[in-house]
Image 1 (cartoon, rainbow, N blue to C red):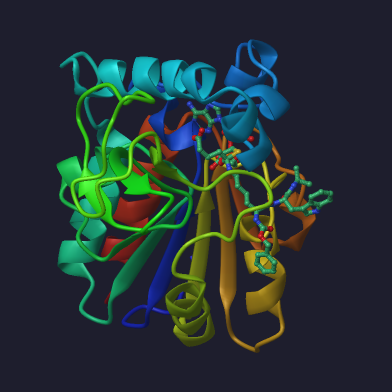
Image 2 (spheres, rainbow, N blue to C red):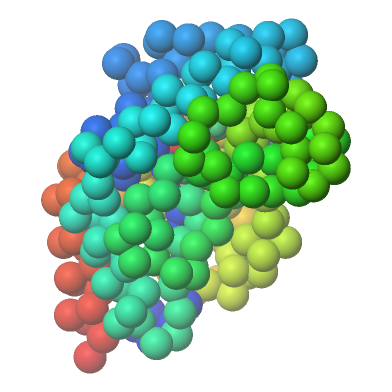
Length: 241
Ligand code: BJW
């Protein structure tokens, strides 16, 4: 373990961390993109063309998430434990739109691709909590416009959220840990390169299999997140000295 004990950690998570909680990944053989086309559900054009179809896709995923069967797993819990025990600070940057990190207890958390349990008015920009189905009949509580409420998620071609805060966290971290992401989607896939431009930053990949950018990490551990993440956190906390 060469991570610098006592210094800031940034953790990037992707769909793989929630897989063992029962949520599908995107690009695995049984993933979401094997069942629906990106162009039909995850672009602004798709929403303009077929808002009801896009709502159906997100309503089904939202219903599952709040239904009770989907719970944080040992990997989410381990990261919350790390945040509580690491005085220099831990920032979790998640690409996931589920709420499993916060349910596990993570607090310093950035949802760079948005949150499925929020809706946003595309007319006035207001963001509201949303645990029920959305539809084109919905009226914005703020501006009153009908049909403009959309899932508060980041589609292809849209700007990810809180990039300035993420850049600041990446620039200040001593350890960068990437968990359960295939490294296919930018800008998240480029974070490891960004931190590589500084000296003394340790980059770790924890994933089921090597990601697209596996060669850019100093340390790699492959296995299910519920096994490799708790073991990694235990090792990190044990090495504090
Ligand atoms: C396990 C496991 C277990 C399994 N344990 N591990 C060229 C052409 C056109 C566009 C582009 C281009 N180059 C770049 C772009 C931009 C584009 C992009 O990256 N496209 C690529 C496809 C090429 N990006 C964007 O458009 C982004 N915006 C943007 O770039 O704005 C401009 C900008 C300019 C300058 C600076 C900054 C920005 C927006 C991207 C939005 C992505 N949205 C989605 C949908 C969100 C809502 C929803 O959930 O429906 O986000 S797509 C989908 O992919 C979702 C995810 O967050 C994202 C990443 O996926 P993730 O998490 O990596 O999942 P998988 O399935 O790919 O991988 C899972 C991994 O887990 C695998 O490795 C498994 O092995 C592993 N695993 N089980 C541990 N048990």
